[in-house]
Every structure is written in C-alpha cells, then in structure tokens.
Length: 240
Image (tube, rainbow, N blue to C red; front, side, top):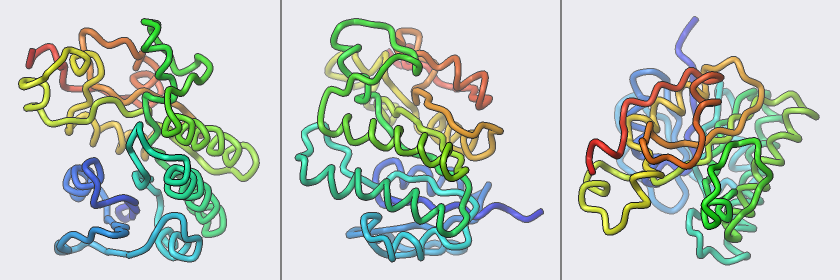
C-alpha cells in the first residue's frame, strides 16, 4: 500500500509550517493556503482558497486520505464575526466536504480554551469534563468538537480533536515571562507525533489534550497515551 495523502489546512500558520516539515517524510502532503502562500517544495501539492468556501474546500479534500484541519482564527480575542466565518463556517465546510468526497479521517485543531474556566478555577481537567469555554474562540472550537461528534455518529467520519496547549519553540520556555507555559507547553516534535498518531490510530472519535509530558501539567493526557499511543518526548521542566 502506498503512502497516505494528507491535506493540511492553514499550512502557512505556526503549527501548519511545523507539520509541513515534520510530516513530509511520512505522508504525501497537500497544503492549503489562503492569504499567505509559502514557496512550494519538491513533492508538495498546493491548493488555494478559504476553508469557509465550500467549493474550495471540496476541491482541496478530493482524493486525500486524511485532513489535518489547522485553519482558523487562533486568537482568544477574536470577534464573533471572525470566529463565525473562519472557525465555525470553516469547520462545517471541512467536515461536509469530507463527507461528500469520502474522506474518512479529520484531525481537528481544537484548543485548551474549550475548558479554559476550569484552568481559571484551578481544576485539574480531563477530556471527559463538560466544556467550559473562556472566549468566543473557545466556543467556536467547542462547536467544532461537537460537530465532529455529530459527523462521526451520523455520517461515519472519524474525527480526532486535539485541544492544543502552548505550541511554542524551546526558546519560549527558556525565556518565559511567566510559569504557565511549564504546565501547558506542546513542543514542536510532540505536536508532530500527536498528529501522525491521530491519523493512524484505530479510534473513531476522541478528544485529547495536546501538550508535552510536562511535570506540572493540569490537563490530563492519559487517554492520548492509551488510545492514540502518544509517547511525548519533551517536558517543559527540563528547560525551566
């Protein structure tokens, strides 16, 4: 069997660029850009358009084995208008395009802000706890998780939701201004591993916190270890 073809939406974003480099030896990549288009490397396919444009995302997903959906507005200060188009309409179009084109697996970039008020209250958080979004951004990602659950149950998709923590290079931990990142850090290589394990795991639906093996973690990653086989290599404490 040949290599899987994987679409990365939001390929020009901070995480998208790291995944582009980290997954290229494992998969044939198709990269979806919107406003920012990076130089095309050998062996890459590139498509242009907005994930909120159904025709554009249908063309982008056609013929791929999995979609890594990173596109969206990542700001906790994002306005309703922005998350409505880029996050809510965008994730709906992505799931629906996958349904229409027969793409079975979606890796959905969710966020720890889906449960942000637990963090504010000092509550150790597992994926099973009810959502408590701390922003309209968090609300939009909670919608993406819930919509994914619906598409799994109603249409047979396979959706892996990753509640990404503080995705930063090592230097951000070393030069940190505060200690939150020691609990919430997701290293570049652990992010790459978490995504490819999400693509390969025999799991129809799951919600997992996306952080490294941080000693001070207050989000639980045991289910990611057990169900996805995730074996994080990094711990922010080593850089503290």
